[in-house]
Amino acid sequence: MSEKKEQLLVVDDDPALCSLLSRYLTENGYHVTAVQDGVEMKQVLATQEVDLVILDLMLPGEDGLTLAKQLRSESHLPLIMISARGDDVDRIVGLEIGADDYLAKPFNPRELLARIRAVMRRRSTSDEQTAGKPAAQIIAFGPYRLDLQRHQLFYHDEVVALTTGEFSLLRIFAEHPNQVLERDALLSQLKGYERNPYDRSIDVRITRLRRKLETDPSLPSFIRTVWGEGYMFCPDS
Image (tube, rainbow, N blue to C red):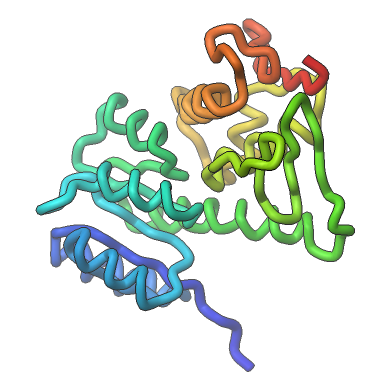
């Protein structure tokens, strides 16, 4: 029996780019559906199983940021945002919303392929780490429980919504309590491809996590900054 191919959904209003990405990603082992606006995107998501979404920021009708917010509120589906607007503000906004990665146009399709593989590898690695383990794979800290098998964070009995990237980052912290973790080390574990030395995605994700975990995100107790070195997770705070 042949191995099931992962299904990618490309959402971009440029027909030439859709055709290029569809052909290239298909040649590299994926099933690809390409659509040009949010209406078609929602139709595909309602009728097909999708493993990862590649979403353009600038679309007719509902823009990519609005669609990303809706998608993230409904699921933890891996999401890569692409845009001709490659400045830091747009990139940070995309990551703040919950995108797993952000790629500025124009880009080499090989770069997008590397990003897709890195995002999917994080999901696969997380699944493998929990496969075959007892159900009680839970790390407790403060009023929270991180369920490694179910990929969920609970505040008492209430589920706290986390993106794939946020869950992966929190898991790394939770499995290395009271240790200083350097930014480069976190980037290497999370991204899995050659990184830009000015990449600030870790800081953005930590800011998002603090907003969800901390009573006062400006005075964090669980995820602390160790100036000049990195970050430390303090579960007993």
